[in-house]
Structures are given as C-alpha cells and as structure tokens.
Amino acid sequence: MKEELLKEFDEWVLKLSAYQMALSLIGVDKQTLAPQGGAAYRDERTAYLAGEMFSIETDLHMVEVRRQLLAEDIDADKRREIELMDKEIEHILVVPKEMFVSYTKLTAEAYEVWHRAKNAEDYTIFEPVLKKVIEASKQMYACRNSSASMYDQMLDDYEPGMTMEKYDAFFDRVRERLVPLIRKVTEAQQIDDSFLKQPYDVQKQKEYMNRVILPYLGFDSSWGYQNETEHPFTDIICENDIRVTTKYLENNVVSAILSTVHEVGHGYYGHDVAPEYDGTIFNYGISSGMHESQSRLLENYLGRTLPFWEANYPALQETFPEQLKDVTVEQFVRAINVGKPSLVRTEADELTYPLHILIRYEIEKGLFTGTISTENLDRTWDEYYEKYLGVKAPTARQGILQDVHWSGGSFGYFPTYALGSAFSAQFMKAMRCDIDVDELLRSGRFSVIIDWLREHIHRYGCRYNADEIMRMATGEPFNPDYYLDYLEEKYTKLYHL
Ligand code: ZN
Image (cartoon, rainbow, N blue to C red; front, side):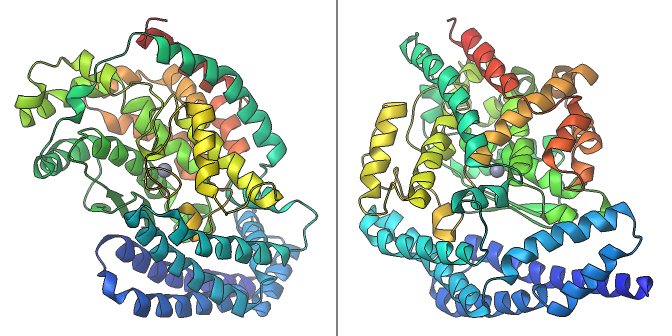
C-alpha cells in the first residue's frame, strides 16, 4: 500500500517536472533568442501548457495520495517534500482554472507591453496593464481566504515566514544605519571611476568573459551555458543544465562581469543541490532570499574584492590596454566599489542597493494596502527616489519601467534581494573562520570556496528552511547586524571616513 502510494507520488513529481522543464525552456527562449513576431502564437500555447500543468498539479486524486502518505510511516525527507508541495498546491487549488489561465495570458501580455513602454519611455503605456495585473493578483489571493493580509501572503510566498512586521523591523535598521552612512560617503572625497565608463568593445568583453571569468568561476559547459538578454536571470532546468544570462554594456566594463558572477552564484546553487533532490521541490522551491544570498555572496563578497581582481585584472588590462594601462588593480577595485546614489537598481552599488529595495517595498506595500495607486505611480516613484537617494530619473525608462518584475505579477519578491545580501554577510563571516578566502581567490582556487558553500548550504536545497540552514552553517540565528557592520566597515575604510 505505502509502496504503491510512493510510486504514484514519484511518478506525479516526474510528470510535473517534465511540464516545468518545457515551460522553463520556452521562458528562457522567449527572453533570449525568440523572434518578437511569434510572441502572440507562443503566448497562447504557453498558456495552454501552463493550464495543463495546473490540472496535473491540482489533481484531487493526488491530494488524497499525499494525505494518505502523510498518515503513513515515511522517511523525513519524503515527509518534508510532501508538506512543501501541499503548501504550494493548497494555494493554487483554491484558484479556478480559468482564472489561472487568464492570469498567465495577462502576465505574458504585460511583459510585451512593459517592453514596449520601456522602449518608448512612457509609463502611461504600461499603467493600464499594470493595474490589471494587480487586480488579477488580488483576485487570486482572495481565493485563499486567508486571515493574513494580502501583502503578507505575498511576502511569505517568496520567503516563508516573512511578514510586513518583520520586514518593517529589518528595513528600519537598514534605514537607520545606512542613510547616515550614505550621506557621509556622498560628502567625502569622491573616487575616480571614470575609466570604467569609457567605450569598451563588446566583442572583446565577451571574449574576456569566456576566456577568463567563466573558467575562473569553474562555470563549465558540461552543466551550463551563458546567453544574452535584456534583464539578466538564471534558469535552473536541472542540476546539470543551468542557463545563465547577461547583458553587455559598451560604456561599463564591469557590469556584465559582476552580473555574470551574480548569476553563476544562482547557477551553483541549482547545480550543487544533492543529486537525489533533482527535479523535486527541494531544488526548485528554494526561497528567493536564500537564492539571492548565494548570488550576492559571489558578486559582492567575492567578486568586488582585491584578491579576486589580483587574479583576474592582469588579463582585463591586457584586453583593454588603452583604457586601463595606467590604472592599478587597487584603483580598479576602489572604482568598482564606489558608493553613489543612482537610478537603476541593477546597476546600483552595494551600499545604496538596499535603499532601491526599500523604495520598491514601500510602493508594493502601499499598492496592496490601498495607500498608493497605479495612477501617476511614476511620480510617486520619483518622489521616493528623491527622498531616499536624492536622485531623479530623466525618463520612466530609468525610473519605474526599469524592472520586469511587476509585469509578471511578482509582488513581494523585491524585499528578498535585500534580505539575501544580509544573509550572505553572516555566511561569509562563518566561511572566513574555516578557510582562507582571500588566498583562495588570489590563487584561483575558486572551487574550494564553492565546496564550502555546497557543504554548508547548497546541498540541502530547501530540505531545511532558511532559518535552519543559517543556524547549521553559522551557529546562530539570522542577525542583520553582520550585514550593516560589514557595510559600515567597508565604506568607512574605502572613503577614509
Ligand atoms: Zn539574483
């Protein structure tokens, strides 16, 4: 009896993972190579496949199978797997299929409209569809009949256990400590980073990426490849099929490099989850904050350090002698760590980044608690940027239209980015007690660092929740002070405050 139920459950998981793979690959294709002209045709069929997957996921017979299995004596891994799937499916089970299909169509359409609006630098093109996406999201969440507020439910979907109350407390501390620090940095003697923004031939950047950075990171073509896109992301098909994407900018030589280091951090997480968890929720269900903790750890805590560049700068200098021949590695590293209020989140530095997130958090909270509307949201956006960062976007392209997330109905996602950075600081502290990170970076033994991450974090996937992994890896619960101490120490030194 138990064996039969287990077999049925595993077959169902396999079937779901097949649909998931198809939809993921279509999604990657759509954002990289697919011709724009086929969008309507593709979207309609993608919505159909998503609808089919929805039917499989919400199969009532499988609800019963899972219920019976939970009543049996099964091992702890399987129990956790079933419980996680139950939680996820419970949320969609309450949504009528037609509502789900039309939501998928709407978000696909919204993506195209967002793209058009961004190119036209015109928020009014995007506003009507954004409003529809918000309304549709509200309808879907209303189906859950939860006593929790709508935005709390959204936050919990991306980071289990998180609420507005907890995020408010977190962002209050971020605001308290970082706003004065940013002010001091802004008033200090500025660092010259103009050499980073000269024209750097994109073909040469690509050549450097493939010859130096990807091999240094150990990002191997046997389990992953890199493509280009408008808004870089990583897609994990399975442990040995990881797609990372990047975007090359002619006038910024480090943008593609650091965004690649970031995405490879996501890629390693998917690659290093224990092989027996492949295709299960333990791999694809990892919380956003945990995922972001790994990408940011690679990008900021490793990729922006002097030892990392002692290994990789000579080749960059050789690739771009005209631009970099008179720039020392120390000057280069200082320049890539400049802390300066700016407009675009994905281009923001480590210091001001959390404030970009704070702004999105406050706007989302307002949209779903009813204090902010989509009408003139571009103006609200600008007001927040002036208030927290003292900058104003010349057009909506660098303002409210910069991010793809809202077109896809991803509300509650942004705050995990800031949380992830804060998690990484604590992981780094623990890692530095065990291994000589700087020496490993300098000597190009990046794989030893990845081994530490695999051993303490990656292999578990979401077999344990973020809080449990944090305690196991660092010996204590999450404490944001590690993050704020790290930023304060780093920027005090960098700017001689
Ligand atoms: Zn990321």
